[in-house]
Image (cartoon, rainbow, N blue to C red; front, top):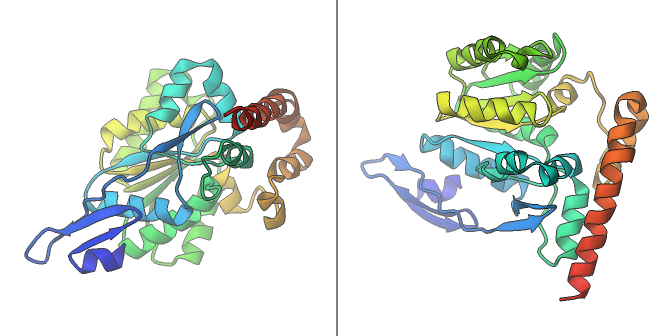
Length: 284
């Protein structure tokens, strides 16, 4: 992207950028892709690098947005609740966090290039923010975790400006006053990139409200990514993530909290998703 911008005009997978004249570069990315229908929603067939470059172009142009990273659990929730489905599908970027979604897209004959997770984006977008001098905000996790994540991120990217961290109490959003207090804290810090790790759909509903107050910022609903970055929750080894077994690793670490979600709720949905995708491919 930078090469295309510096030459005044460039064409690539992410579209066209034009020089604003008199040395002022104006990013004008053209959305070139269609969303891939999978799991009852539409996902953007982008790599992590393409997501980062798109966000960079939009931030440079003064436009904000939100990123949703659906997995099986989010798709299952969206399948039974039209409001949640709209919350996902109206995001500026929707990228596949769960490997079953990647596999289902392949079975349907409309593959996505790779899995793109919030746990990875918190690092790659922080690297971008550090390079461009854009302040970031970390919202979520147990007390002290967001601050520790900020320390880990800044130790890796010393130029990163963390303009705020906050771990709201679990039931903060059960009252208008609690939600308003959190929104005031975030908006007062004027971040350009905000990572919100409160779990779906709480984080995404809050993000939708914050988008109206911070229209030039980008928001990432990142679930456990803040805890991963802090090191307070361990992430599965790379080979397990690539094999689609990260859920098994997390289940082994937190069986009491995750057993019902993964085994009773999500596993049957994932099997129906993959089986249905295969049948659709074979009967075309």
